[in-house]
Image (cartoon, rainbow, N blue to C red; front, side):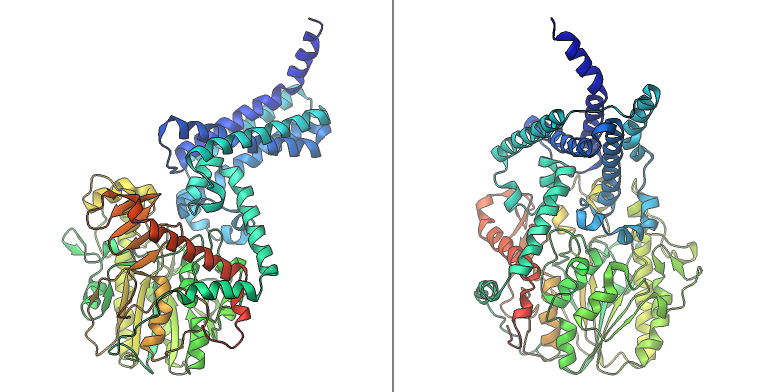
Length: 623
């Protein structure tokens, strides 16, 4: 009984810490469970999701108390507020990117700041509930007027030891259902589901640091390992009818912002959503099984993939993290063939670090927002509307040295899909998703802008001696809208198979004077560099990379997505499940296993090339 006063004193002294842990724990679990689309099934996975945040909360509290030992209540409020901020920013980021924020992105405040237009649309009143615990703790501390309560070093050490023990228990539970989670997975949702969003930030920071360390230690031995793997892959057998078909022509590479293939050749209210693209398809090479392969870097990732034949990184954007690497890019190689490569985009030149990355890639000129007359009247959403963008771009295109390689990046069809009333060309679709409804409107505007552009190109005399490559850069509608998407597509519900299929984006290669045809070959953005070079009559392919000529007679039917999902001629793999492509039904996982290993090798060796900056060791040799 003599110990009871001490126990009572201990409980009173640390009661606020225990209350803070409980409230932060509960708000984190609720946020994980209801704000993120985590693949949780069964009581065991639910239990893992429930306990996973505790270790990170105790670590944050322990470290904060270690620095503010004599001001423990202030330390508690800081941890409460910081956890709320991390959850809050993750909610917004997840709604926009359908992914979790990483430390690299979090530290890029300028990048997040330019999402202001989307943030206002993404915000929900319930999001601010993550700060309720902070308000409660602040009021309790204020009433007690005890801000200098001291905790012992022993208590802090015990707190951290309990946190480590809980994390070990968490990982033992995870290993029973997901062995080697932190070494073999490509799916961030699975990682967050099992260790929590806070632990994921630390995990990502460690992985990023290890990868950056590899850049310093990488050498010719690493190059030989990668080259041996790449040389084991079949070489393209070129189609003699297609090779050099566009030799000497100007190249227009047009990025169709957020356009997915599911809207092509579709009607609502008996009106075509993309009438111009539908007509262009009939006189072009149209690839109806072409997939975007982007990650966190979205549009910038698409640009990177096309110019380098490399996959984006598992987290962060290469345009930020590795803008000083050597890449042996498409524009660099085209310059050697007499082309003048430029980029035109009506946005701030620093967005996605483009002004630096384009220099690395070898572009001669970047026409950015400062080169356009941008006013309140000709802007919407993220900036200059597509029609005035194309109109103002014509003066720049007319005076370029020929032949040129001009990449034009469209902008209007960008989340949150805003449009002025005078630009609405189709009746508003009615579903429970305002995002999907307005997306259809902005895609229709994109189509009209392209029609206008082609008319101007013809009037300028640039049409006949050019080749036009139009590609979708990434998805526009995320998983969050799966119920409304299922309704639009006439399905009861969407499966992981359907989600992968929705990553199809348009690829249209239009060569004036050449009829073209539909090409049902499984492919991705990584295949564009060799395709463009071979169409222009270049038989060399510089740099380390994974693409294949889309017109090659032996083109592999294979496309790898950044999360490790992949598509083959007969199968679709996603979420550790194998689907029959013709039926969309689950099939034996063993049928996908050989392709899964190949997909993981592609992503692993691509990461190795980027993190090790291995192209710098190539010197003047050709791969």
